[in-house]
Image: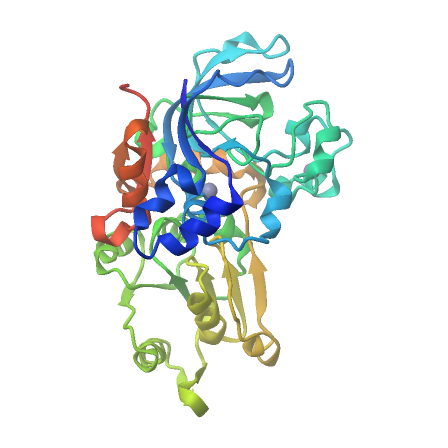
Length: 418
Ligand SMILES: [Zn+2]
Ligand SMILES: [Zn+2]
């Protein structure tokens, strides 16, 4: 089978860090650790595992952050991955082969594999406290000690970030039976392929305290931001949602998904603060060296970009005692934490999915997304703008890494017609 693998080579990595300024394509080359390979399909790690055939495999921002070298060389995420790996965790797939301990009725079913490699998947019993509480996205066993479980999986938080399971940037990969979420027939492949990113947005929306919020800001209107706008509306948030981005082509979709206003972020710092102040009724305060602060501001700010500027501005644009939710894979830089303590903000990190508390029920994020997709409250299919065959991976990555140049939102590999 064909698969796109990643294995960092420190010399190649450092060379690309420099070479990318003259040849941006080097990031998508073998020199940067990416390779299209012919591999044997991965073996089942245990009797309660299945092998799936990928239909569509999405390109997630976390994957692109690896390819684009956005994580520093000493990233702590290295503790929660193992190489070489086949990239890709966003998927809609078909179960092809089942282990002896799995109900044979799974064979042929269309599923989304919930990618988290938590205690249940690893065969760790009793599970860690987070998994026992249903918060499996924050499992304590993603590191090397997770190999003690029955499945003997190496370090890795997700399908796609470990050396055993494979990932959805390959034609086939393996999954534990507990990871299978059947896709209802009324949800087409193209919508099902968006389950994972939308689930991450929905999880963020449910982690935020918007019960008394009147105005929230979604900073960044790409896949996560658009999903968040749709998710906030789907769970019943009726207050104002402002979306903000530098790319104007996202405005129509943002409004359609439920944003009241789309602020096209101007490049100058002063103009950005003025725009937010005008919108929120806040006040801009100027200090030395061109720095600025806002009083007033949004009840909740969702940072769906994760860059130094978006983090700093999210902290400054939340009202006192407001909340900032970190939705995107962030890679920081120098952050001014003064607003955090001075204005007693709540700063919430979110990652992945879990068993959610929603409308008096306990339900996993993926099936909840499917329920909402079927009801039509989470109809986000227009987010999938570009699909490519795996052999066109350089073009796919170029599109996904330069979304505004291509008018792209979500890019995915399509394995259905080889
Ligand atoms: Zn992802
Ligand atoms: Zn766990």
